[in-house]
Length: 294
Image 1 (cartoon, one colour):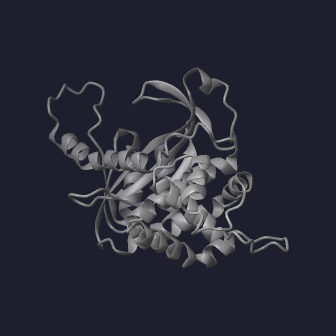
Image 2 (tube, helix red, strand yellow):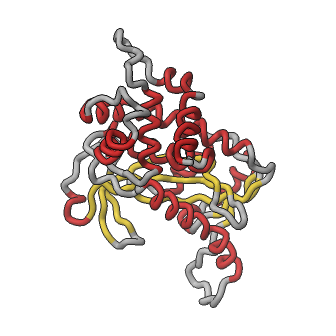
Image 3 (cartoon, one colour):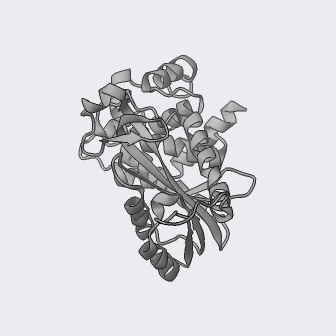
């Protein structure tokens, strides 16, 4: 059974060779190495699906159990360097597979928007971390009540009753970025969003944006009621409770993504390219699971 799943994953990657080649244009004569980009991507995605979350663990697993399938596997150093260079290919694959998932959704949808941290360092170490400083920032994680250094992963997902939400758009930002401007950017960059309702928490309350969503995208923004100064205390705000209950599955999605890929833990990342590989490689692995049950 696992052999069939591995072959399916490899074929899915090879079906998108043109996408990979478009973002991995090489200027040297070694433009088609013996251990191909498609094989390297497959090894990484398969390793993540087998709960090998570190590059060394993925390499050792492949060398010990899959060498018959990947006989041209290079040294670990070459494998690691190749993975980091393949970060744009993982991003392109993730974007394409996201669009494939979106094709099967209905004409009117309930969307949920939220974010989760991806942590390179936390606690006292967060103030001294400098890895991937082009993207990473120090911020406070209110749910964990701790400071961390890293990024945020922002997700707009389509609600599917009785199932995990289906991601339709993802974006990474610095950890200190407020959620609202990033959500606005996602919507502007992804005009394919279908009419419906967008459920969000209080951080996304913005009357101007709500009007823009309704006029330009036929999407109605629904957030919990924000208590205004002088309002009497209201016990059991029914509408706010309803919005929160509709939003709850996004937490299940993040928990599923973290359990499946360990995306939240990036303490071993040592460069910007390594961070991008970590993010988009694991997103691609999760999407492959949804699409191909790899």
